Length: 121
Image 1 (cartoon, rainbow, N blue to C red):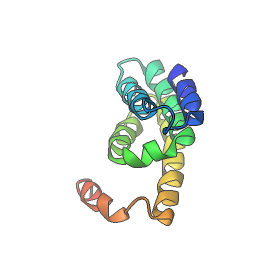
Image 2: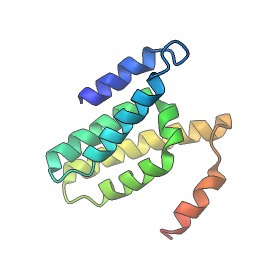
Image 3: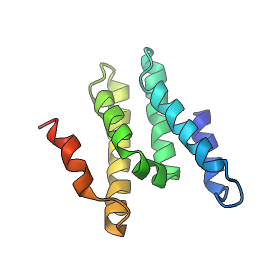
Image 4: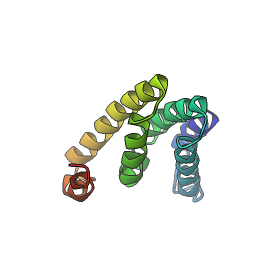
């Protein structure tokens, strides 16, 4: 949860005036991704919640690292815990919203997803 709060703070920071902002954003994402793979279902649930908040606050980060988020989301959907799966559903909806917005604005190409999706069909 603290990582999501840091993400909110970093959203307000301008990348031009604070060059370390991009590095910090990537570190936050890496930490939350790591927590999503934890052995504790409680940690995975809170990590899913944090990931939702990070994607919500820093959508450009979600677009840049879509393939990592897709893999994490896939594993969260297969989780044994019902709460983790329900958190994954909320994250999935938010990620879809962000990616569709990026496709509509031209900052993301749906063609780049075909190869990753083909592996699961």
